[in-house]
Amino acid sequence: MSFNELKQWIIGSVTGVLIVLTAVLPAQLFLIMKGSVTDTFPKVPADFVPEVRAVAFTDSHNRNDNVALAVDTAYELFDKDKTYPGVDAFFGLGDFSSVGGEGDYANYAKTLDEHVRDDTVLINIHGNHEFKDANYKEYFAKYFKHDPDTVTEINGFSFVAFSGERSTTEWTFTPKSLTWLDKSITEAQSKANGKPVFVFQHPHAWGTVYGSTYWSDPQLNVIFNKHAGIVDFSGHSHFPMNDPRSIIQTTYTAVGCGAMATFELDKNGIPGQHPDGYDRAAQICIIEADSDGSVRIRGYDVLSNTYFCDYYIDDVNDTGSYAYTYKNLKAHDKAPVFDKNTTATAYKNDGGEWVLSFTEAKAADGYIVHDYKVTVTDEKGKTVVSDTFIDDYYVFDGDNTADFRIGSDTLESGKTYTLKAVAQSAYQKKSDALKIEFTAQ
Image (cartoon, rainbow, N blue to C red):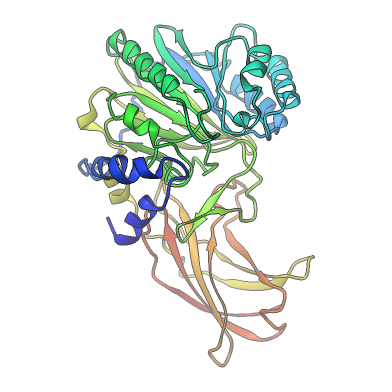
């Protein structure tokens, strides 16, 4: 692991800093660096037949139109599935609200009531935005038909859904609620008989999936690291699920489920980035399993009707065979490649800003170009633009160009400039530098 990668793992969690520094951080770094490099990733065998199917989504923040679309889409995908028809359950992983007010609960619950069928299990949990309102327990009891912390048995599989109780802030859980989580997982695993045990909560465990070094709760690490083989699903960060870092296996499997309202990303290790297209967010996580311990996890973009990832775990209980470790995922990533016929242009948009556009670099199969480090120089060699731009890999529109706004006064029409660009993958693999001339339109 490079220094820059290590830095990104260490850059502060928003809660529990002392816990991270004294206990969680060293243990987690040790876990993520374990594992071996495999020749290939597992493929879904032709004879895999699910015995349960659930759909998880997170962080809708009052975008109930996207929630409705997600539910309807899931039914359309699987009502006539020949292998295993239907959807057994939906799990909403919190932050369906903005400030936790009762009106947000009412509107969200109304949407679900109108779209989720009576014979489908529906489980919701609190996110930190629900914790902003002191009446979160009262509202939950009024609008949902189950406890905030609940274990649901579906076709013999255990699904542990953890809302927790707000501790001193919206970012932390009470010890009592964490004890419930620990005991519930223990009990579920004791009777699983080889079946996977699924866990759902709003924040990521620290230092696991993409976004978890910023948006997470390290209290969860203490619990999850004790329970080998669980499969955990979370949200909170809004970091896109189609980034390959949104799955990681250590002693258990952790999956980040993207977002249903807006995406957030990081640039040069700094979170809070909202590049163009960040509001085109509606990703769901499809979970299937059989009683032999096999699990299939797929990401689906409901705005474009696109599957964007497909992970298969032959046996979640065989931790020594895990393929989606940080080490193995990074090893299979490759530096992006620019096509030899790559072209670049610059034009002014309706707002008067210059837009730099060039043919996207190609990422390795199943991977992404995360960002481009771009320098533009004029005819005298003077640098007029130098920045890192996040690629819109989270938008599924078939466009193969990278388009970045570079300001209204950076270029002059009719002048020739030189573009130098380096594409960087999720695991910081860098392309050869692209260097081409273009004329500002």
